[in-house]
Amino acid sequence: MKNKICNMALAAFCALAMPAAFSAQVPAELKAEAQESLANFLKADSSLQAFLDQSAGYAIFPTVAKGGLVVGAAHGKGLVYEKGRLIGLASMTQASIGAQAGGTTFSELIVFETPAALNDFKGGTFEMSAEASAVAAAEGASKAARFRQGVAVFTLPKKGLMVQATVGGQKFKFEPLQ
Image 1 (cartoon, rainbow, N blue to C red):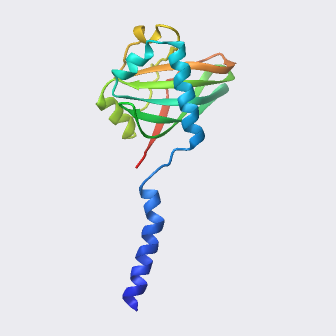
Image 2 (spheres, one colour):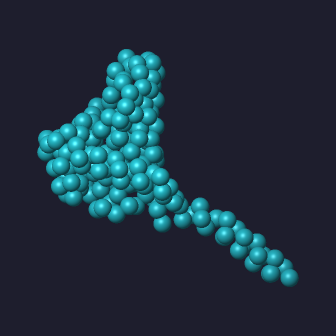
């Protein structure tokens, strides 16, 4: 009897713990938004596909909301791909202080040049430094883009107006799919 109770308790624990251990599920709405956002990036710059094909992977954030008045913040959720295969979810947060006013939403595409850069992102050690800058997606932008520390960043405005548009100081959280 005691063994039966222990086995039932262990089974109940495993049933509760396993879904958490096997991580995230992709919300259908986020996946659709990410696909639409990537299509918009490719429409803005037809040479971007070759840039992506040569990379180790990328993270796409379909909607990043950013606002501030002296003190600002930004947040977005996205998907991470390795060699074209969806491997996880990501979230981005940013806090800033300084000359800024307004609010905006934009899409952000972070391209990883090497497996090491992608592994830094997946390992939770990746963070955009203060000197990081983004390239506005436009025809030919990816041809002129340069990787900095293994990363290139593209943005595509959605709506709003903000007098400050940097990507420095962004922090990311990666959640693998299983």
